[in-house]
Image 1: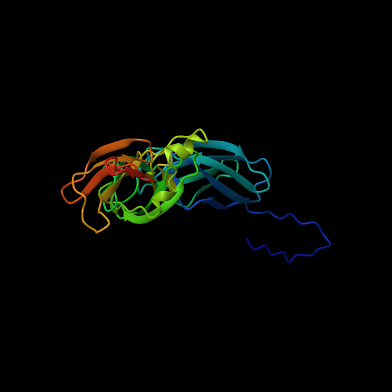
Image 2: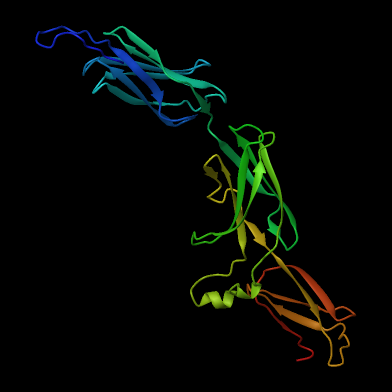
Length: 291
């Protein structure tokens, strides 16, 4: 407001100053459902203690509530709780009333952001071996189709120090996210402690296990392993030959695994055997007949 005074300064004059609501403004660009959003009202020449009423609304008829107070230093601030069931694309605003001055104003409008809900985080299988194509899925509510999300895979640690493995961008489609991941273990399985080694510290063997999280618009879901744990299971191929390189057929074997299990069997006619679904880690094999 521009003030201009061009009268004599050696006499007393009465000047009337115009009261005004200078601005009514939300302090955020979006209104997340279930969260409080701050607002601010700036005035001119209404005086300290001037009563003020503020009513929050949405264009689709949601009531955010009413707030009463007093203007201090030409300013009044507060916050409204955004309803959790507010709709996507609804716009929220607030109305300001200074009853003693006969002044009203309306704030800017900001879009409501419904509460993002991510559920049913799932692996397509409970166990995986190298090269398996695994599908990661989750249901998503509160965002538009084609909203980008990030899936992050972690190796689970019982002590809570989970190791980050990899991440992938993915788009929300029909309130769902889906991703195909080809599993591969990138470390040396010889470095996985055996049950015998862990017993020295009072711990037990556990094969590598994985969980995944989903991140959307700054919010993270799945940190409590809601996806369940995907267990890494390995395989072993054995081929036995004599000093001339000839296969030793139909020989009994005893396989000592990392979790202290033992598997026994017999090699085939070519001196070979392949064992699936094996706990990864160090192993030892004995041939009792040869020993």
